[in-house]
Length: 294
Picture 1 (tube, rainbow, N blue to C red):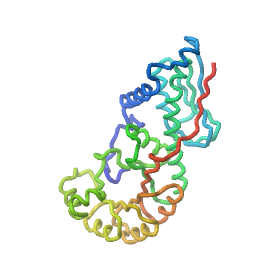
Picture 2: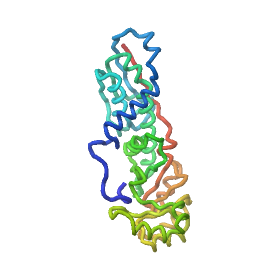
Picture 3: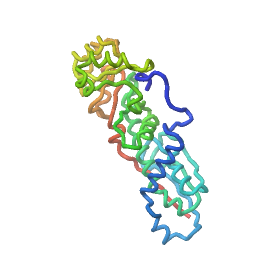
Picture 4: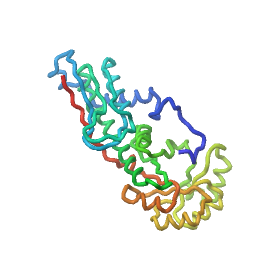
């Protein structure tokens, strides 16, 4: 995102947000979970050495995310399987669009069917939801962000899917920014003390953001000299008051109970950022089909 940690992080050669070794480990775990001791049904019904071709196709309008992960599934099952993407991640496609094909061992295609679809349907669901939010904010300056409300083990991929849909990432991990929240404030005695401690000990490349729940706390945060303020669980009317009071003195972010139905109302207040936990914890999976033929 850039406002909690202005210096870019991450390796641009790893667009998924995790290394090839991490991706391999994630896919290996998913395959082990699904295969167990092997695909019993395929072993007793499909002749050894049989070849086949599988086509992934959208069954609804969606934004694609996760094709490289699906490719890795088949690569790890059988390196001879040929993967041919028909579109790129981030593409908006209509129902009926071919997304990719995989050709080779029928046993390998059948073994990877469910795992590849699980990744594709889930990640494309997040990207599709993000695309909807992007459309809701058309013409406004407000940008939307994800949160750390992610499925354990899938955070990097889920945040990648948000980017594919047009959103931005908030902190990836707790070491990725200084965001002082209500539990921190209770433990140290309030905004002033927390910000003073953070200023004293923070690495110089990090900005400080603090969570507030009222106009009075907003004023206190501004006086403490923070860079950003997170407005927590406020109505659009309350956020508008905060925007007017702040008058550009700090970056304002809002979060709490925001979805596609109300995000534009929040954005129209003039707030800088909107964080949407539902992007990663509640985005519905989309409908993608894999048809395997001789």
